[in-house]
Length: 243
Image (tube, rainbow, N blue to C red; front, side, top):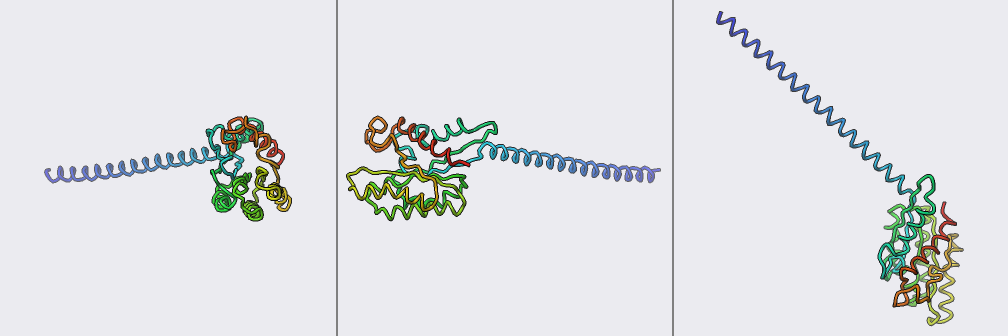
């Protein structure tokens, strides 16, 4: 009798261990299934968010410039690149909800040689369009016109290599630098645009340069009203060439 009871308990214990093992396996499989589902949901959520961001920001415009672009003396929201972005999204968004992003790549004091050193890195952001707003500091420093033109050409060619359409913004300098130099300087933008077959904005500071009411007390950098004027000028030329 004692032997039979002992055998019964041994069999019962084995069955209990077997059932416990099966339960553990089922629990493990259940947890793995839940984790897999959670992972799939996270991936789907991430992909959905990426698609949403891509649809919201579908056209990127890079403005390579100096203090005029950076917005020296005014807030970021008062500088013409920000105002241009607002205007583009307000006027051209349309029923398809196309969004524009304007990248402000302006650095105070930047010259065309500085633009050459920065352009390759900036193009890694994969812009859809490039606006070149450099040259003013070259003129104020009396840098040879041929050197400025070659630097701008290198920037244009870098964009062309990546098939990025470009708008070249022209600049002018005061006549006290000499008639010959000021004329050659103003002409270089038109000549380069023609030679490289890129769009030209004849004068970035049209209606702003030389007008005290449009500039800060230094009479060099635009005030908020001046930036409003510049954003309108850029917008009027840009919309003619956007795809």
